[in-house]
Length: 107
Image: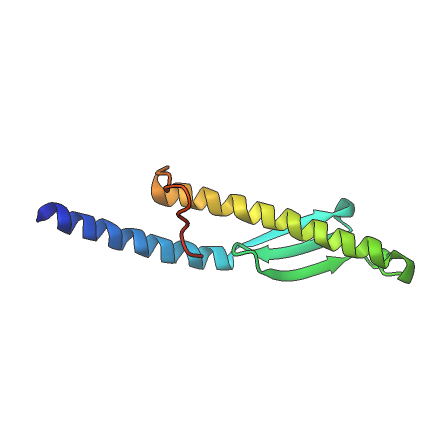
C-alpha cells in the first residue's frame, strides 16, 4: 500500500511539473532568422507565431516570392529551436527517462 501511495504522489508531482512546463513554454520566446537576419519570426515554446519582422528593403513587389520563402525558412528555424527547447525541458522533468515508442505527452 505504501508503494501505491508513493506512486500516486510521484504521478501528482509529475503532473504538476508538466503543467508548469507548459506555462513556461507558452511564455518562452524563440526567434528564427533567415536571409542574414532580414526576416525574423518569433514563436513561443508551443510553436505559435508571435511576431514577424521584415527588413523594409525586402518590401518590393518583385521580391514577394523571396519574402515568402524567407518567412517560411524563419518559421521553420524557430520551430526547430522550439522543439529542441521542449526536448531539453522534458529531459529535466523525466530525469532522462525515455517514453515508450509512440507515446507522447500532451502539449
